[in-house]
Image 1: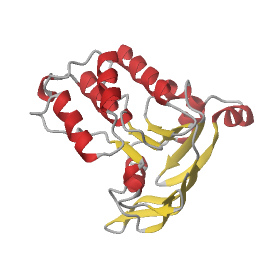
Image 2: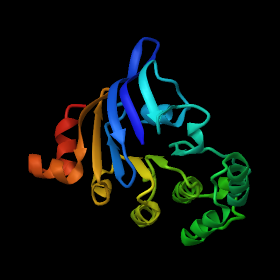
Image 3: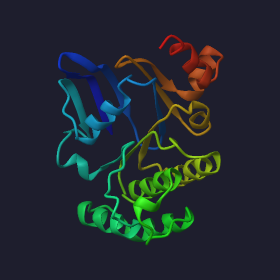
Image 4: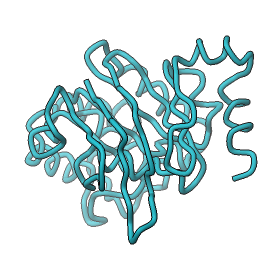
Length: 230
């Protein structure tokens, strides 16, 4: 579905992403793992078509990343992507106008499941409520690839459980979900495939169960070993 070959992104001569090669297939949940500054967010933004690679190739269903692929790839950034004056309803209308694959009925169902008031203003929301609203918007697109950058940031353990439950409910054989998070112990419970990125390069990747069997360690312990000096 998504093929990334020797992808590099430089800013002012410094590589934010140095060399990433990986293939994303439908029906799996991927963990994109790495310490701060490892290149996870830059990589996601390149896949989303928001940043152009300096070199290398990224293709979706054989198409170069561009206007057409944006119709099939949903991306939830770490930062807020709506205005403070907006309510959840306003944000939903914005997404409906912008994305053809946005399912309004699904959006309101997700808001209800996450106990979010459609009329509540973004400016009045807690960090946990904002995280859930962003997730509801992103998952309401019927996209082939769903990327969630740090979806568990700044929320309590109860909200985390709800976020993870909602992600699992929206995983299907027809989509691939890519999640980044420093809370590796939370992701380990649900992922099928792990991609470890260090200093902009993939240093290890593979089926999560196969990695655990091969190295006789949990994904958490592998993470600690790879990034212990970062």
